[in-house]
Length: 111
Length: 139
Image 1: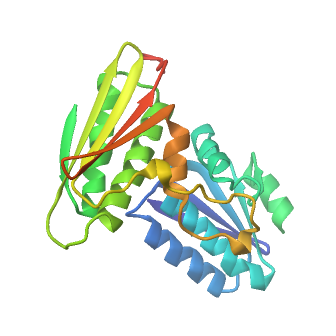
Image 2: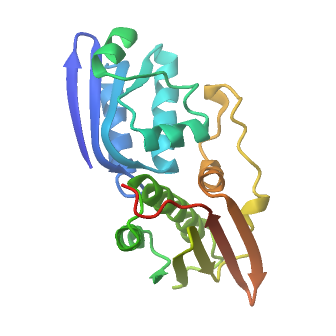
Image 3: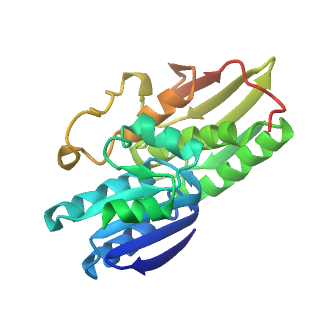
């Protein structure tokens, strides 16, 4: 999986490309942790090119969110594809993480 | 189509290719292929991570079958008895900070398929997932 970071003002956009599965989730978790440790607390996850997510990937979202909570940070999602949205809905994550059709809208709402 | 894998998490990649091949052969829509892949990954990960009381090698058998618009996925393992149908559902209404980080996988599997049957036979777990009215050949 490829992870790209872009900082826009006080917001960090993290674009995921590929599969967030058993194999790749640990790397993603370490990356997002180091982004938060580096002082970024307003995060947008761009999931437009995410092909696959399993429960380990969802747990990584949850852990990131828990880490942001005491920092009064925020994590939102952008560009959810149908099949990814369905997994988030079933997992009950849709009410936890606001999502937006575009990265721009996500950035506006998180900054 | 049948696949036998070892109880090693690196085998998940083999599983992914197996599902891709099956989906291609039956011209399944990408969303369905994703759902099968997700369900099998969750089940196999659970078996490999928690299913055995020893550290030795074990085999897990997976069968995918498609006939008359009905898709079945079968998982057979010789691990400890575990009936996913009896696993308690996660509480999705608790606040974010109180959510346990586990327990989601089985919940996802249950919701991706129409039915799920379990039996314990000859010291093996047999799980059969079924999806009805599969639209074959859709893109």
